[in-house]
Length: 194
Image 1 (tube, rainbow, N blue to C red):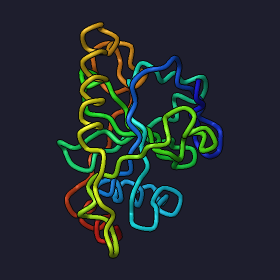
Image 2: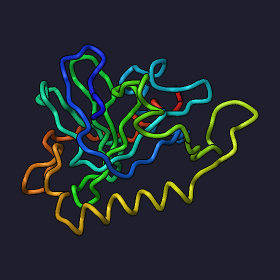
Image 3: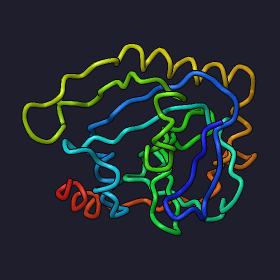
Image 4: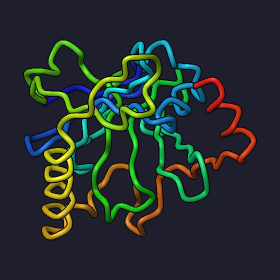
C-alpha cells in the first residue's frame, strides 16, 4: 500500500494491491502548463521542466477522506483530465476523459517520496525530452517499456471489467468532478510561463 495525499492532508487515499506501473519524467509543455495553472511549478517541476509521474490502474486508487475536494481541468476541449485538490492546489494525476482508458498518471507531489523506489522501482523513463528546458537536453529513455506496460494496464483492466471501479468516474462513465476547460488564450499564457 502506498499513501496518496494532497500537501495539506485534507485529501487522502492509498494505492491498494500491486500491479504493473510506469515511473517516468515527462518534459512536455502540457505538464508544465498544468503545474503553472496550479501555481505549483516549484514543487512539481525539476530544473529542466520535467514532471515525475507514476502510471497505475485507476481501480488501485482508493480515497479515504476529502474526495469532494477533487477537481479537474482540461487544457483544451479534447485534452486529458488533470486532477487536483482544491484545498491546496496539489496536482493528483492525469487521466483520459473516459474510464475505458483506466490508468492514472499520479504526480509525485501526492506520493510518498521516501517509498518511491521501493514501491515503483528505481528505473525512471524520460519522455518528451525534446521540449525539456535548457541545454543539454536529457536523452529520451525507456519509451518502449513505458508503452508496453501502459498497454498491459489498460488491457488487463478492460478485459476483467475492473475499469468500472474507478474512483474518478461515476457508474455512467462521467468524471466525478465537472472539468473546467481552458480557453486558447489562457493556455497560451500558461505555456509562455512554462
